[in-house]
Length: 212
Image (cartoon, rainbow, N blue to C red):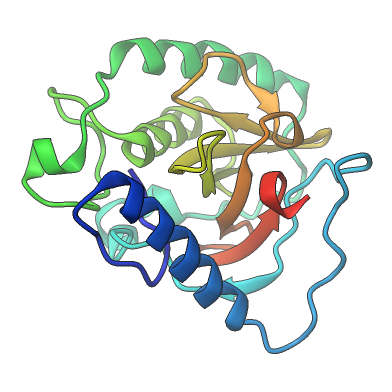
């Protein structure tokens, strides 16, 4: 489970979600010193998640770039991934979803917001997204076309997914479903994403879902 920026962890799930939404979104919105570009409407969404402004990395991301150099690497490949990348990603997404047991950080590590590759016990949403990124880099997709993103899912719970950026748009690899879909078809409220120009940094997205 991903924590939104600027939040604490209350004692009950319902209160935790309310605090995350109120504190996290308020803090992020207040960070903008200039007007945002117009957000996409539900009827005419852009095929890409637009980077709007640099933001702090999600809680737990910390110094992961030092531990996993591939997570923040950039090959410099100018050409966007094509349809073959989607065909490559589909079995990877499905296989990892079925192989990796979902387990909360609190249960596995005794604390919250530990970003790491899944262990033999399993992993949570961000761990699974990271593993998919690693496997697809190993398969030949440029790392800057594979971007970890945070969002609110359909239940408005904090979530993390992997974005595959192609010449046709951004597609979502999600541990909650095997089918890879364009981001605008997920119904998710996208919050933050690794910056494709510098994946060690994170950028605000604020698109889809409650932002439509």
